[in-house]
Image 1 (spheres, rainbow, N blue to C red):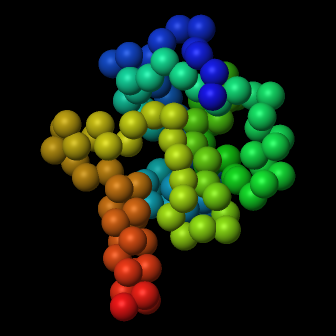
Image 2: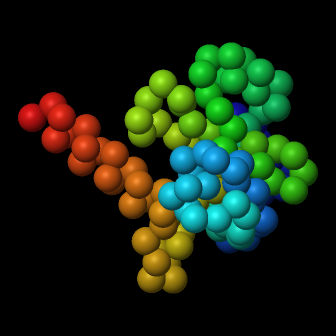
Length: 112
């Protein structure tokens, strides 16, 4: 993580989801706007290291910087640099949140 040159506080930006990824599937779209409230982003110098460790980029911004990543060896480890949960402020349950809850429920059911 690295400080952003310009904080993204109460800002919406265009997000391009990678086609075929789980995030694109659960969101039901490949692009859209997302809410941000952050001052940090992924340091691009570490992207190759993350990819080599099994992470996959799920979303990009218009400047070509990654906005979401998933650990491909795990059923529910992903992270976004935007806040999909902010959709709840408009009365919507975000697809990523629904998917995460379903994944946790499946894992708990398997371990019982």
